[in-house]
Length: 165
Image (cartoon, helix red, strand yellow):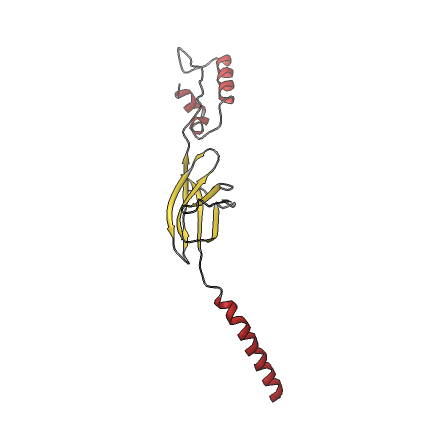
């Protein structure tokens, strides 16, 4: 039994001697940025593009957000960075920051609504709020040709649509 005990101790000692140099080489030299991309109401944006640029080297890394709007950039060198998020139909946003060794920085980015670039012109009844069937068909055709953006959402209600004239 004494021989087995010595063999086991020798094995553990050898294992320890082999692992210590590799553990020493695991010194932390990087930083991480994590966060969530949301719209102005706080809803997460899936599949948004997040880009991080290191100021000193102009190195760019890109990631897509997950279903819950989350992103992660591990193994970043310490330094100055600009992080930008963008998604179709929303205004991009950027943040500048300085990362330190071992830091895990949480940067949540909120994208705003882009300015409306197109207008819909609806026919207007010259005499009253009431429309004939032909006028209603004309309004329906005009609304159908409008792009579906945040600016058209309040006018889904027919009463509000008529009062907007």
